[in-house]
Image 1 (cartoon, rainbow, N blue to C red):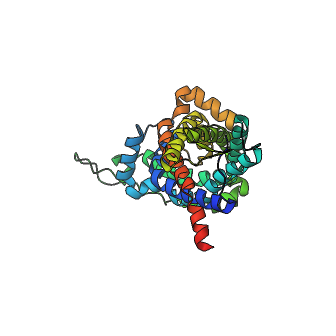
Image 2: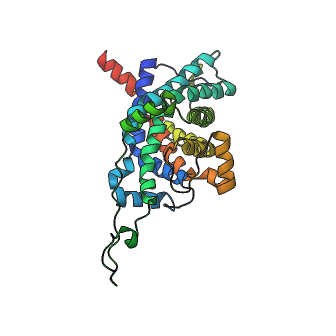
Image 3: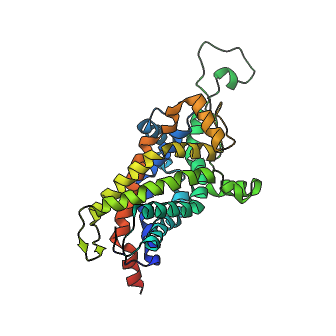
Length: 325
């Protein structure tokens, strides 16, 4: 399946970066709900995605739904740029006489997923801590009147209003980064790298071949080269391929999220590694726990990659380079 290749590598990088910024801005609140739902073990603070978002808005305000977004928006440009550009480069290298077999599409996706982990792991490591802070705060018990009352006169029949605990200081990406580098070194930022690799490589192996085939449906060939798909087809192909790949690797995403979460709530498990995490989740929560956040994940990834592929194929990078040139 040949495809018209006219974009330079700088143009691919710009397209990938712009696509990532637009996509993340649109779907980040759903991604926050996914992280909080996946991290729930014993105490069920949230009953589902809509309940999570409504409680977040009530307790943290509208912008509480964007906690951790700054990290994503800062690092999503190199992450998406690497992912999309690497896939295109591998596809070009593996093509023979303008034709790329299915095994080549899968291998190109594998290479793209492997390359992006360099940026994805620290990005998600920081993002998860910021996203999950609100869930942990909601779990903290409010002191009872007896605990809150200082020694003094005998209690009256009228119960005093419940005391509100002082909120803990809000974590920042810079603070978390500094603490990890100080205590764990660079390896601290790459906690869960193996689980991230286990998630992103299969995702890319499913996503990119499926997207390429959906994007090629109904396209006429101009000699040996396939005509570029219209915007709507690239958008729908990105949504369809993204949702299928996202749901397929959700169990791996749950494991990755649990491993990368540093602060745990009362009674929640900590894990020694991928195998230990898998076993504990299976024993304590059952198989259904591996699909926590699957709907949220599909709702995040589908439009994210739909927007990404649509912007990518609009050729924003080519236009910008032409203006600068």
